[in-house]
Length: 224
Image (cartoon, rainbow, N blue to C red):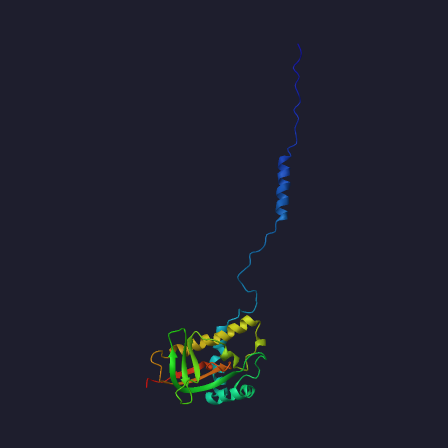
């Protein structure tokens, strides 16, 4: 009778676990963990705030400058039509950009001929020489066109700003501030025939339309 042969047990190496460990190790070393950006400005300059900039200089610089620089509207407008450069040197901003139109600071007094207060871009047409015809159109907001207030100031220069966008926002901020602090307080009903007094600025146009005055100060008298 043959003896039953017993086969030796072979201990095969367990490769799966080491291979898995190597694979995981490779995956981890191939990834980068990036830090989450924080909300802090890391010491950078504060964000541009056009509204605050205008508010900071309005009473201290803007209004006093316009009061001193402005001429009576009939005189300014007559000189502007005859000699724009001479009018600009006297009533405007000689430091303006070369390709920009002249902008003139004016005192405008007269009577309201017609008014458009149904639009957000409300205006009133003013007779400044007593002939019963409108000589200028005054913006009373809240929406206003142009940047005449900014452009009339010789202490404001484009090169003081980082880019065109900031400069444009700064110009609009003057209109917003004038509306909030001055124009929104004006009466809106039955304006025809009332006296009006304005200190502001207008940009030279084509001559076909009425000069469009943006006020920094404005008063409207009682009903006649």
